[in-house]
Image (cartoon, rainbow, N blue to C red; front, side):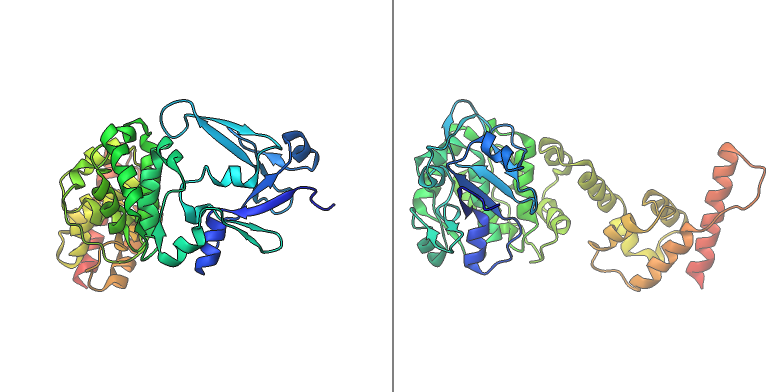
Length: 349
C-alpha cells in the first residue's frame, strides 16, 4: 500500500548526502499523520517523549512533525506537540543548525528555509533560531560537528550565543552521560582537537572539562576513539577525576587501566622480567583469548617484533599444570611458577 502521507528525509542524512559523505542513518519526518494512523500502517512506535516509529520493513525511523516548548532544565526539559497541523517548516525551525534543517522530498526536491545549503557551501555551523539556547547540549553538539565535518567553522553569532549559555551555567544542567556521548563521538573523528577548540572559544570546558582549558593537546590524526582518549588525557594528571565525572563506561575505563598499568611493560617486553610479564599476561586475560591484549597493543606504537609478542602471549595462555593433586593456593602458586619458567625459556630462545 502506498504511504498516504507526505514524508521527507531530514537531518544528518540530507546533510551528509549533499557533502558526499557516507549516509549511515536515514531519518524521516511525516506530515499530517496521527499516532493512530501510523500504528494502523503497522509502524512500530518507539518514542516515549514524542511519536517516533520504525518502518515495518526498512526499520528506518519516521517521526511525526512536531514543535517543542521549553518546560524545564537540561536536554530533556521540553514539552512536545505533534499534530497533523504541524508543518514541515514548523518542524525544521526547532532544529539546532541550518545544515541539519534541510529536508528532501521523495521527488528529490530540497526544502531549505534557513539557507542550510548555502552554509554547507560556506562550511559554516550556524544556529537556526534563538530557540538554540533552550537546549544546552547543543553547545557540545556544535563542537562535535566541528570535529566531524572537516573545514567547518562556527559562525560568530553562534559562538556568541554559546558563550552566553556557558556564562549562565546552562551546561551544568546536563547529565554526565550526555556529555560523554558527545565527547565520545568527537574522539571517533580525525579532528578531535576541533571539539576542544570550539568549547574553549565559548567557555564550554569550564563545567565539565576544566582541566583541559588552555592545554595544548596533540592528536595523531587517526579516528581511533581510544587512542584519541589517551592523547586527550595524556598531558594532564586527571585520569580518575575526568572518568568519574563523565561516568565513562566500564569497558572504556578498563582499557584505560590496562594502558596505564601495562603499556610500558608490554612495550619493552623483550627485556621485561618474566615474573612481571606473567602478571601482565594474566591481568590482560590472555588465558581466555587475545582480544583485550590486542586492544592494548593497538595503542602502544613502539613495539619491536610485535608478531613474536602475540605468539608469546598465545603460548602463555596455553600453559597448564596437567594432572595434579594440588588445590587452592598451592595449585595457584605452582601454575604461576610454571608460567614464569615457561616465559624464561621462551624469552631466552
